[in-house]
Image 1 (cartoon, rainbow, N blue to C red):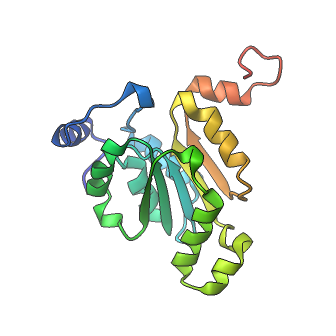
Image 2 (cartoon, rainbow, N blue to C red):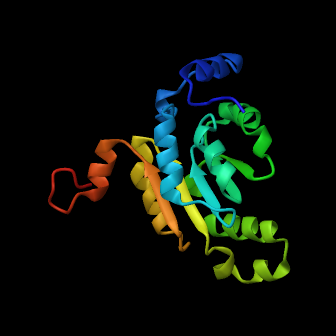
Amino acid sequence: MENLTSPKVIREILARFGLEAKKSYGQNFLIDANILRKITGAAQLSREDLVLEIGPGLGTLTQGLAAQAGKVIAFESDYQLLPVLQYTLAEFEDRVTIIPGNFLTADLPGLCAGARADAEAGALARARTSESLKNVKVVANVPYYITTPILMYLLESGIPFQTMVFLMQREAADRVMACPGNKNYG
C-alpha cells in the first residue's frame, strides 16, 4: 500500500495516469495523515459498519475507511480517477465498491440494503431493510461547491445514518452552521 498522504507519491500517481487535479470538481487531495486519523477516529468504525464515501479522489481516505469498516461504497464522479482507484485500492477490493457517477442521483437506500445483505449473505437481511441499514455511516472530504446539495440529499434519503463525518472548507461549515438572518446563512 502506497503512502497516499505523501505529496511525492500523489504526484507520481497522477503522472503515471496522466492526470491533474481538476478545479471544476473542486478536487483537493488529503495529504495530512493526522487529519486522516482524526476523520476515521471520529467515525468510530468497526467491521459491522457500512460506510458511504463521497468523492474518494485517489483513495487516501478510502484506504483508511476500508482498513477499519466492513464495507465501503465510494461514489466518484470523475471517471478519469476510476483506474487510479482500482490501483490504490487493489488490496481492499473485497471491502470497497466504487460507484461511478453522480452521487446525487444514487439510490442510497437500495445500495445500502444490498450491500448489507451481500455482506451478511442472507435473504432475511434483504427483507428487513431497517435492520440492514442500522450501521450505515457517511465519511467524506467534500468539495465546497457541492457541500449543501450533498448534505440535503443525505438528510432527505430516509436512511437512519449512525454517524456522518465531513471534512469541508471553513466557509461551507460556517454556512451550514449559520442561523437564519446570519450573513453566512444560505
